[in-house]
Image (cartoon, rainbow, N blue to C red; front, side, top):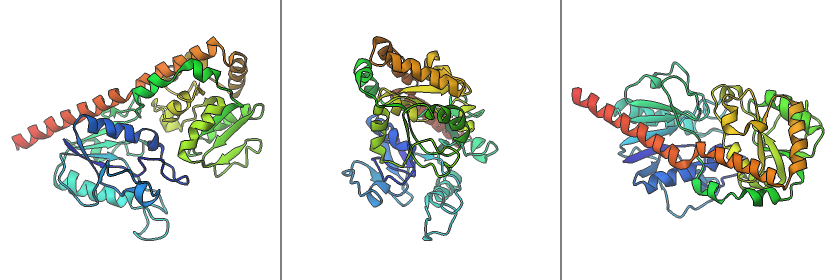
Length: 350
């Protein structure tokens, strides 16, 4: 089918000073849909070309109009004061929210086009009309999504899992005990409890946008780094801490940080208050305090490079199968087909 796909981000490396976690999984997801015979047309701006100067060689189609499509797929955008809510053309304005409103008004409201909303940031209100409209479906990247929503996790390509050799990764020299790549957004509480206490005792590095760091003078913040450099930080780090905003932790929504770390051989320590923590990591890597983090790091430093270390990495790689690309594409196709059948039935009844 022909899918109109709306996302605000990049398919390639993008630009350093712009957050977009979707870069780690968006392109493989779209390529897999194309490989299954779907036609994809992107309905937001081509930011790879316009902002990053990245020519993707005509492999993808962008359309800033309102082309004919069979279904609309939205990576959900939300109001960001001073950015997406300002007047078009004003300084700092991004037009993603305005464009999304235009797409919804034309396709979802007027044309009754089957519409799927992927609420990747959990910003769609529980009472939203789109959760109870017959020709719309909501997907969330959580193991326990909102009632009525479908679980569509951030995907990781199976060939990357097959290529991850635990023994090679365990043998890699690592000068950092603890590393983290990601932005501050709503992570102060787990950072205070798990990362900061350990950082006072071990070699560490935090990369990403952390604007308010005065309470952690002992922590080494490197600022934002290019997207492609994240693997280098994790490749130097023995372990990381999976720090999630509470709205993610409560429903078992794991970010792409877990496979970025694991595929570089960096072991993820998961706070126990993350729902389904032991589905994301082996029980040996579940932690309950900053002291637990230090104890785990001490143990990991003792076994670094050994068969035990390789076995732990292998166990983490195995758990990433939960996010497998084929599994997530199957989920989306199932939701799409069910939605199209429902829409067709309703139109026939009308």
